[in-house]
Length: 315
Figure (cartoon, rainbow, N blue to C red):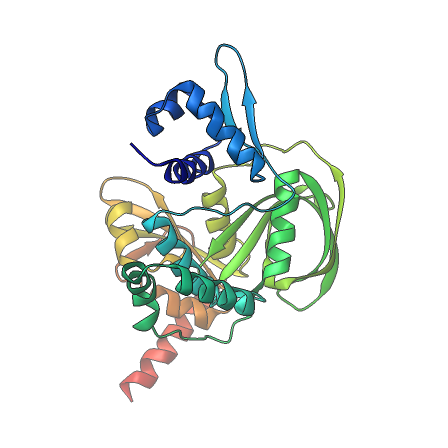
């Protein structure tokens, strides 16, 4: 049997672990009768925890939103996950470094020794390679996420691939993360179509507007983002047939090589794109054995580029 103080801590952890608990489930987890459970809930309310209760058949308890953030109890795996995630985020999201370091310092003081070793092990043996690419801004991400959650129209400045800045007004749907880059998936109200926006190219002020009813996306959003960032935006696009199943090629090709499409048990199609013919020639080095599905009008230029490169290597 748990002591009263241990039981209260356990009750807080349970209420924070999921949105709703029936009184019966909580009583069984804590190994107490309903009357003791009600007394424990009252003690939590006196301590400032906004615990809501509903009576009758199907009644139960849930942790409500309060004016102050109550202490959060984490189990071992959750504490380690928070520490590791903070260290990883510092390398890809700008503007959170100082805050993350303060939080990690607090966690190092609070965590028992066995967890400190687990949480710091990855950081201790990892080298962070800065690529020089712009990182996503933390404030831009959180405000975009809030607009997605609250279904509010969003207006912002956006710099395209050519450096031209325009004002965009969208219905934000989701944020997508692809390594160091973050993308906002949204319905573009001015263009009347779905678009992806790189977060590091978005600029303020971010202005929220009227609420909207979410539209049905054209496909699975993860698949849509993958197509949008690895094929659709490039001037030079190519579709090639590869020998091997889609599963086999997915293991061999890097994720940024393009979008794989199933064709048969022994072949698949890769849709790939590049900013230049030279870059396209480099892309094809990953494909090895392939045949063209479509013959673009710039194919002769690609053939001359590959021949020129081969000639230089032979010299």
